[in-house]
Image (cartoon, rainbow, N blue to C red):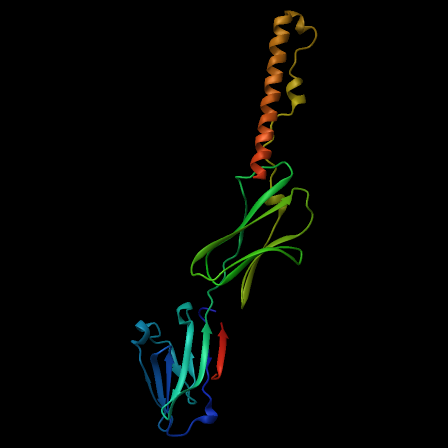
Length: 250
């Protein structure tokens, strides 16, 4: 992980006392050491200076990279002067710390039965985002590009008593957020039920004002019920819609 130190070891059994060991990042020379006098040299300006003050060589010629960064990921080769064949090749991958997934309600969706959720993360790479119901995987999405955002939807019933969690992981670590349905999911804003509207009718003693008044009140009730049913239908409609090679991960 970023900030850690990593040691890439030479194959010391094949080295001779008069050998000179050289380390390369791809084809870029990083450092070399002469076994006889233990004299070291570092090429600080190599690779755009990204390794400046972060490289060390121990007595065996092993390369130590301190305060690792994601840009340190790549292939490292160790050579000796006697041959062009690498003593060893290392594939190093440095991962950034993972953010905590955020669970929010999808406000564009409205249902009286289901709660629409979205789990999201930003500025991530080489990760997998997943929804779990208990220990069972429900869905997942993976991405290897650098610095992107991921989101994954989920629908649950308001009365669901199962445990749900959103997990972000890479090969070396993970972050989990557990869903609290009662906290995240609130029922859609309710419209007044038809009975509540009907209760506003005048009493029999007040209806003596005449048939015209009764017709006007009844028309209002019908219109209000129509509006309520129309909005409910709209809400439901919206919802439906060949050498030694070592792989290092840190």
